Image 1: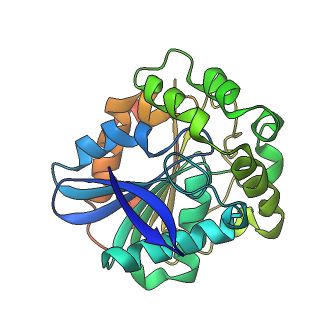
Image 2: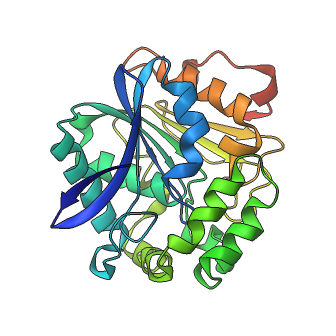
Length: 260
């Protein structure tokens, strides 16, 4: 277990591999731990990091830091403390929002963003997310997923206020314009069977540097329920030449269904 002090509070993180840095950012349910399979796959070529946001996992439980804006400041302070320069971000749900917020504020430090299960409007988020206890949410979403045991075991560490207050703070964020205004390549990934975040419609318009892929057979955790497919897509995206639009990805048959 690795940890640093930020604002005199503990922030837990883990690191694997060597190479260009990639940071994995977790969802409202679970912690850094469910990223382990993706981190292991990417660590063959990259130095992979994952952290616990304020209120989650083994990081400090400080309600004053639970809004998404404060979590984005945590990301900035984390990169500064570890001396990490330009980085690729891979965010899921809550982590996807924070990755895009941070990138809009510090575009020179972000090489590219992979955004998984990003809500483009707060109305597409299932209300259970803001009302059920973390353990019930984990049981609902993870079921018998391979690798889901780790996230389920971490759920009791979550401060319920961290979920509630981060959701409430979305009223101050225009989610719909976050990917459209990004100055870096962005890959939007959604599971078509996601019960928590409704997928964007095929008619959603995005700029050339933003590419959308919907995965058949995936729910809210495509990195777990279709890990091989997800990891291949992640590797293809991370290995694109800098500045190249993800629209140039060579499409695989299994994710051709809804791509633009």
